[in-house]
Image (cartoon, rainbow, N blue to C red; front, side, top):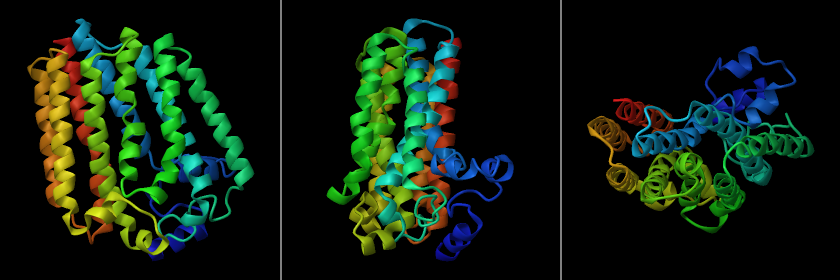
Length: 314
């Protein structure tokens, strides 16, 4: 990973981005550093932010007897997830720029590598947040207030890795907020189903971000960054399995509360099987596998979503 990081810095790419990604291949040269800052070259992050929104919208459709979630809402969630994930990453990189310069995987990021100045990063942050605000204002008042409430958690997250061994839990609170938003956009209120879905999303995030943090466990120990990966150590596979189990149980409770049918339960079963496969495959000494397992959570999430849609339709 250290060699890969050095290559990334020299070429302008980022160490943990897929080689030949669309940003590096097709974006104009002036836009590429900002695309890297917003992680457009690593779309897994906005997928993981978007999927709970779509779950929630589909669950609301099931509960209301609708054949399909509001397609405008699904599109707005997509735009908002890309914008707000980019804004969150930009904020994280501004706060963490000194730490990032000391970690092999992150020193090729745009700010520590000199591709983007801090001042321009702040301006880009404001632009992305403005896009997110425009998206949020398209929903009902309850959803607007609920969505705005997430900003405090998002703002605090970068500091948590300095203060607690559980920064992944704070990330879970932020990344799972969409599990509340889809339902709120449809109903203008909350109920047990989205609350259970949100709790499951938090546990899911703790699990997959622990896997992600295994990539940096040695460097984090050197620079003093705290994480559940460092806390769990060799027991990480077991604890990831525990949090995935909690997630599945909470998702099941959400399905019961929404009176979901057998197709939704089939989706949960397939997602649970995938999560169990992940937990069994973890090797704390293999950062390449850790990244691959982390990214595979998009598969689990989309399979569950597809069968929630099917359950609403049929």
